[in-house]
Length: 451
Image 1 (cartoon, one colour):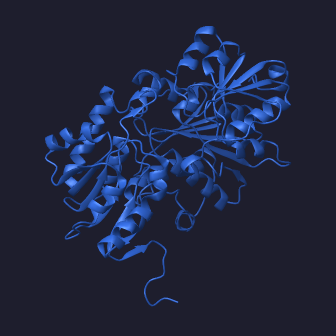
Image 2 (tube, rainbow, N blue to C red):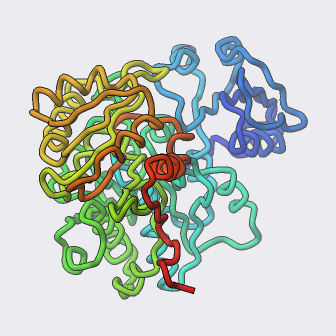
Image 3 (tube, rainbow, N blue to C red):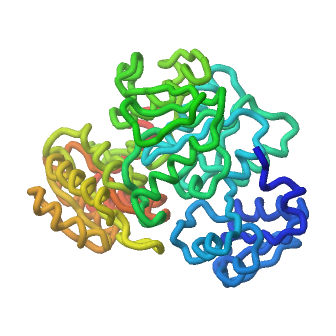
């Protein structure tokens, strides 16, 4: 497969990057070292400009003179400079595509509408437990496993790992010209549609994880998934959360599908046998994905702040008993690419999620601009005890107002939220507990009487 990022392909060409953060700086430096004329078009850079590279603020003007556009992992297909590049026939790539083209070992790539991070890190953990050396990005945004500056550093290491494991979201795949050796699809439903310009384009982006696979490669898909089609000669492996050994493990019900996908990849695609119970016992899940962060007055508090879609919300809530929970719901209703959860498929999933909220909740604290969209659906579903407030600080205070009969407090936004809110949720709960005169016991803290 032709590598579009090889030195002989980029030397002397103008390469435009549309974001300057740690990852963008590392990629810009590498392309500069290969002889490219590197321009970074970012009006709000988050890192220092690498020497020999030029920083400008106007993206559209920079792209008009580009030979190659390298986009950030959250750049949508409807963004003006992407539309312009495609209209002009300018090649578009991304850091993830660079990593797959340059990888010196087989690559496991994990995509799906939900469960990418958990599944990728489970695969890496299981292979590590079997004695394999695994490169998996350690410092992705929100603890995900997206290709990053660390991936570029690993490419320059003296020794290659046995295998590379990465997470690939739809806004990686939309610009990729390489496919992983082992492609894993966890789940598939409409999401991030506003970034692609329609549900069809979203599913087409997901299909690209399989588009360049060939003889000897594998595709791991859920049982019954027929919307994505592996190429001829590719070995197809199917998985279900009811697969032998998976349903019996001590993992939260909403994570069993992730474990099933990981096990199918490790066992069937790679032929590795791992004592599952022993390996799972030492697995540390990435943060903010349904973790129990502590207790207030003996009531467990769960942080599921990464559940930014209706279907992720539903998957978690289905495991909870009826009328058992105090829920914090809501977030951002619009992105730079347009309204979120606005497509027909996403609206259907949002109604289903509101039905689960109505079943599970004793009370609901509804926050953010999304409240205007969610409140009527909750009323339609018959949800009780719904209050609307301005922000997460208010919501944590409201959550602790009355804990009589509450089985758990759960933050499960169902919409995008600010990264800072995810980082400080536990702090806000602790602050609200102190104000209310309630005991806060963070997870992992010694019990009373312990040394």
